[in-house]
Length: 376
Image (cartoon, rainbow, N blue to C red):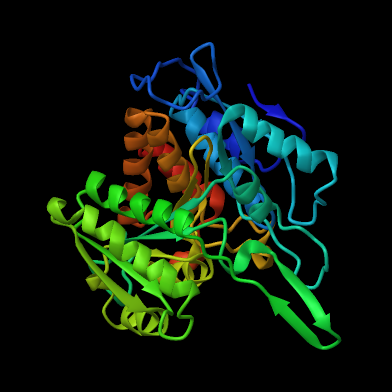
């Protein structure tokens, strides 16, 4: 059952039902009892779904279809909030309330208007109000999708709630704008520990702090020195620590990305580096991501592009949202379902039977969706 406050979209569901009639519901109970009070009724988890702008409706439809074909015990509570939705709008409030209630969300990318003064970004509001402080983006080569660099496999961890994205700007004098960058020791220590814990749990060997402390000696200096202090606590674990100035990091990423393993950085740098990372392995269409807090988890593509230019053409690559959904399933301890869908996506790409235009093919979003289902 799909709780929805919206219109339904895309012919993918009908096509999947016709070609793959085994797409029926089933019930499982995760074994991990330590999950954070996620909403679960009748053996199913209720998850907030925000398709997003641009290609969001098409990629979300692909995810729903594939999850249904895999019998994933998820009930979607879908809300069609957009980047243009004002903070005071009822749909904006419903979306935030839904995530507060369900604790877990899958979300497409929302457009944030550039020139709209006073418009609060929905993305920033969610992360700050719900303290979803850690952004995690996985940049990894996919077999069957050749790119300039091989053996790329690193994680970008970005502090989500402060830095230049604090939204503290004012015009002190006509023609003079002051924009405040906030860095605190407490939140820097929290994101640094998140990065080292991620490295430990995932068999990673090195954490790199990315900064601009040579110029911003107080703000980025605090970030760097706090990361160095946290690194001392993890020395016995054998995790290597180093740091790199952000402009040098950009050059190193495009020349020798294999040197990176786990990267931790402030908000703005993480946004830029995630885009560079996506370009290394094939583009925005294949990079998954997650945003994690103490109570809430929000999963979305790691490279934040709405794809407005291809909206409605049925040519979008749903891999990024699908793999973000796989990360969500692992968060919910639905590991068997996560592994099935993950393997089906990778097999589809490796076999090259359904390449969307961004991957050098001519297949549609529907073609890719049905190919993944056939590989489940």
